Amino acid sequence: MLYGIAFTIKMSYKGAHKIEGFFEYVVPPLEGLWWQENTQGLDYARKEDMHFISMIRLPDFVTKEDFAWAVQEAEKRKSRIFI
Image (cartoon, rainbow, N blue to C red; front, side, top):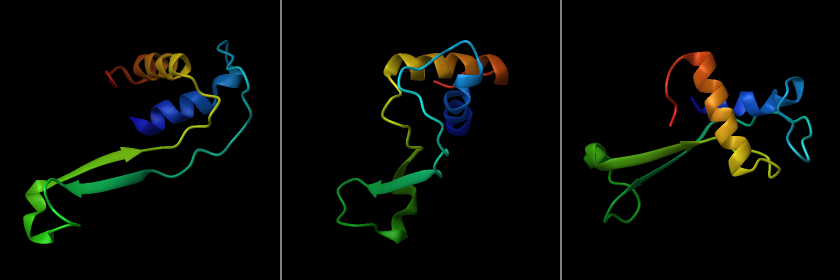
């Protein structure tokens, strides 16, 4: 899902949706953050308590409106709900 949205934004310059300040860029790799509540560091013996978030960095020119547009476009192409 994240790559679908990221690449929709990356390729937007080829379509009708124009993003102010757009420049061509490389979509960065997927990143992830892991944590456990009420724990200093990570306790690998309690893997069921681990939480994570995955993310892909977007350029600063991408606004909330541009992101919302990309989500709608990606949902149309993939026929599923992203957010």
